[in-house]
Image (cartoon, rainbow, N blue to C red; front, side, top):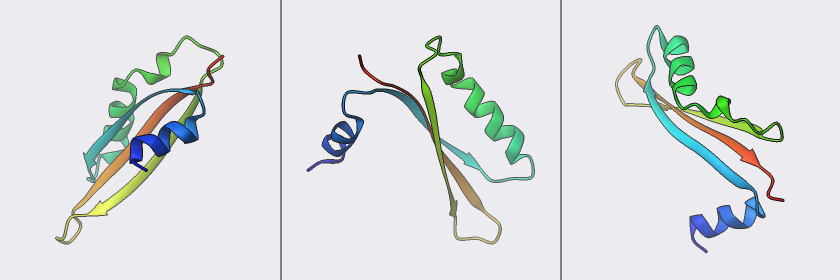
Length: 80
């Protein structure tokens, strides 16, 4: 079973809008993450029945103190 087939099975008819963001980990990462998430516009969804999801992963890049922050954000709405 492919990745997309597994995701569709888990969603069970829900509508999903989302984004994957990759940002460098730095001294100002909190402000950069906030700006990047807000720039997606997912929070502007007019539907009051929407739910939001977020997952994060920090990946070391091999050199000391170099990391990448991967954010997965989504707005999920149950299909009628």
